[in-house]
Length: 489
Image (cartoon, rainbow, N blue to C red; front, side, top):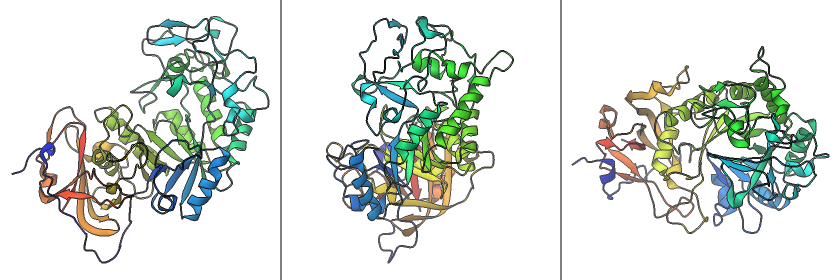
C-alpha cells in the first residue's frame, strides 16, 4: 500500500547495477572542502577521505590560502582534480581587539560599537593568507562610519552574527587600490591552484531585503542612517552588520542621485574581483539584486557564484528566491555552487539534491554538500552515494524568464522530469525530482504515477567508503512540507 514519504519501507531495489560499463557522467559536478591533518585547512571536513579519491571524484576542491596548503593543492592536481580553489576574503579582515570595545552600547537586536581606532593594531590579520597582511598602510584601506557613530570617524566593524570564538570583522574600503593589490598578492601565493574563492563579495551595498538580504526584489533606501537606530525598522545590510554605512560610498549619493552610493560600490566590487590573478568563484550569498547582477555581468574574472544556504530554508519565498537566483546566474553563464553546510537546519541529502535537480544546468550547476555523512565520526567524511545519480535530457528546459514557476505543478509543488538518468555512469532510465516548498503535505500527483522507485538516503556507508544509492519500490503518495523526492522508473 502506498504511504507517506515518512513511511517508506527499508526494502530497497538497486537500479542499473548490472550495466556492463559506464555510458554517462559518474557523478554530479560537486564542490567540497579538501583537508589533511596538520595542514591548516580552510574548514575541517573530509579529514579521512583519501586525497587521491578527492582528486578523482570532486570537481571543485576548496583549500586555504596558507603556505602549508600548497602541498595539498599539488596532490589534488596530481590526482586529477579539475579545480583547486583557494579561499580568500578581500572584503573584510578579522578584528582581534577586545569586545565589546569600551563605549559600545546595547540597543534592541544590535550592539553598536564606537569603531576601531586607527592605531595600526590589528594582530590577527597579519597572516600571509589574509589580505590585511599585505596592506602597505592601514589608513584608507578600511571603511569608516558615515555618521561616525558618535565618535571621531573610526573604522566600522561587524556587530551582527558573531563568528565562532567571538571573532569580529572590519570591512575594507574595496575602492582602495592598495586593497586590490593585496588581493592580487594573496591570489598569487598558491601557484598550483586553478581558481580563487572570494568570500563576502557582490555588488549590492546597502539594500533593504526581500528576504535575508539583497534578494532580487531588494530595494535601496537612504544613503545615511542616524545612529543608534539606523532610522530603519527593517535595517538594510550594512546598517545591520556594522551599525552604519560607510563614508567611502555614501559621499557619492545625494538627493538628486539617490543610487550613487550603490553604483560606486558596485564599480569598486567589479575592480576588486578583477584584481584576482585567477578566475573567481564569489560568495555573495547567491542573492540576485540588480547591483549584484550588474557586478556579475561586468566582472571579467568572475566565473561563478556561491548560493550560500541552499537549500537550508525550504519554504516560500526562501526556496523560490534561491531557485530564481540560480536560474538568473545560469543565464549569465556563471557556475552556481549550491552550498549548504547544515547550519540552522536539518540536513536531508535527498531534499538538497531534489532542489538541485529542479534548477539543474548540465554545465553550470555545482552541488556543495558540506555537512558530515551521518554514520561518520566528527569531520571525517562529507561524501554521499546519492551524488552519483545524474539527470540528463530534461523534458522542460530552463525557462527564458529565469522563473522557477515554470516547474510548478501545484501550489508550492515543483517537479522536473528527465528522459535519461545515470547512476555511477550507468543508465537507469527516466527520473524526476519533486520539491514541496509549502507548509503542508502535498499529494505527489500525476507526475509520479509512472515511476516505480523512490530514492531513500543511504545512512550507513558513505560514497568514499563504497556506498551506493538506495531505492525503494514504495513510492509515497504525499510529500511532506519542506522536503523533496527523487523518483526513477
